[in-house]
Length: 455
Image 1 (spheres, rainbow, N blue to C red):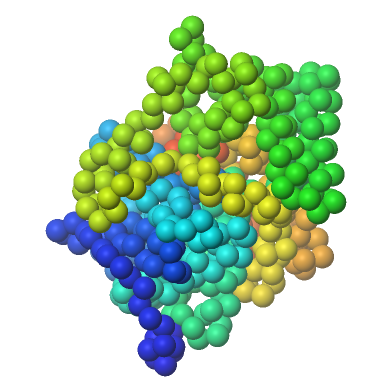
Image 2 (cartoon, helix red, strand yellow):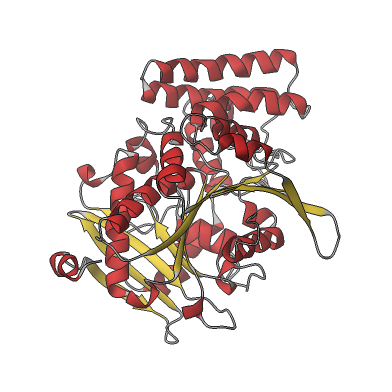
């Protein structure tokens, strides 16, 4: 950031805390009046020292799912839900910045109803404001290669933020060594993803011809509403498609198609994937489905992550406002974004590839995910036709693979052309680093080392 711009930008940092060894830092940032964003930074434990390592921002999905909770304690943070060390934590390779985003998510909060965001562009602007403040207060990280990793809806928010960041860097408004953004099982072309569910499950033996036809009919309603420009109605029919799909698949797990949500006689389910969005989806389904509503017992709704974040973690952080209750998934945030939930951001991906060739655009997919399945991701890449002149070359570029060092089984495929990288991760669902931690960590290090680039 230019010195005069620094002088004009009022530091928004409100209150911070951290560990005695300074390896962790957490802060509130007043990004707008009545809008308070929370982040938690972990400095890398890499043997070469944290100053030598990239900075990764992790954005959870939803919208309204908490990065500091779910992304941290269930996916890539240094400790798991039982507060035990995670062998495949990304902190060993990078400085990790978890952001509860949009405001109203997790520990982030608003003072008034009109402080919520309602568009993807507003989310991107909030994240940009937060990062301007972050670098002002952490200038030692300005030169660290910066990556945005977004899972699910986080990938959609991440690409929009990445474009806003690139614009700010070009204008000299912020100092940042922008290296890339990654869309992990992400909601980039929502209509196409929804339309891909039935074909995917049909060929995986989860739907017969009649079930296929019914699910496609409901997905078609969502598509028709989107084509008419009624995005909230498209979101409604997306939800109805999920419920109709459950009717034919005995409650298949949307985040790993090898699993099913098994109910016992007391109305509990194993919740094998334990996704925040899954529990939110159940609660929303209960509004429309009496059978599901009867199954939502207090025992089922009890969540160990809620207990952790509202208990010992809140005590550790010590700056959380009195009376704030952490939640894994904010229904208010989701509802406020209903008009943008089904809107695609493929055009932004195209602009990033074309206008910012030094910034890597990364797609990675767990093969077992349904909600943001691989077919949907491969479809939105083909939608770059006319938006990026490298698509034809990407399509014919060689596809390579890696093998697990112990089992020697193929664990990942990848394809690269210029600044577009696509990773297919085996034996993983929606949350790739959670389902296949060793392979996800190897993927991360490949991205950092850029070993996939072809001459």
